[in-house]
Image (cartoon, rainbow, N blue to C red):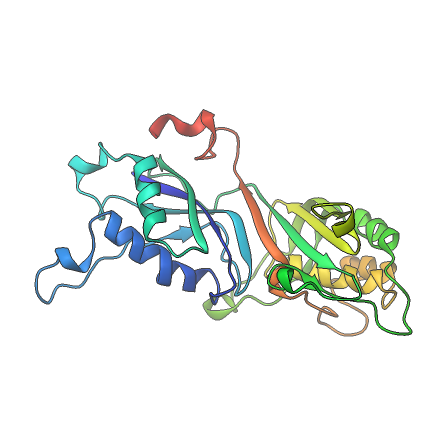
Length: 292
């Protein structure tokens, strides 16, 4: 039996998902599941639960709907597994977690559930093109004001270019080489984008001025692909690149100006909204809650 967690977090203080997992989630889980050091014999090392995530977000990236799982076979005795109250477990975890991390929901899933076998993800990237920055939003949106003497923001050019990039393509030009031990792994660059949309919005009409959000949805994403897409589209919005250059790069697998993407949007504007699973496999949908 496995435990699935739906987690939200502000990624500002962490060096990515791995750091957040080790610093916040695993120690809290160890205490709640009874794996804390106080329960150990002298000299025995704690066995912290191993957590697998649907998306390993980068440093500074946030999440509203990260999904992660762990096996309960080693962490919880059999007699306790059958009596595990997932709502109480989530409550107990939140009492221990730092304020920038929250477990929104917990559910029991079958051993065969693979958190990385999702069929898609949705992201939001927040951007400000206002001439002055908002200090209250500095950790959650990219402030990219117009440059003096340069063309202003052209939302229509961004929207039309984004629409032309929808569908199934090789996004090799918009993916970075994987990090760490995965650098030598051959990655399939073909992805399907079902949504790449620019919208304007704020909490009120006054706060909407210069405030934008990219909604990005697809079946899979290359490393830093969302941030590379956003960064390139912002170049188009300010007239520093033509939309046709992005479409050529999409077709050719590289940019004419060089092999790397012109600009990668900074991480703090990005939020992982949700992880999507096939019908009947979402651990947090009512149709898949039979084990809960």
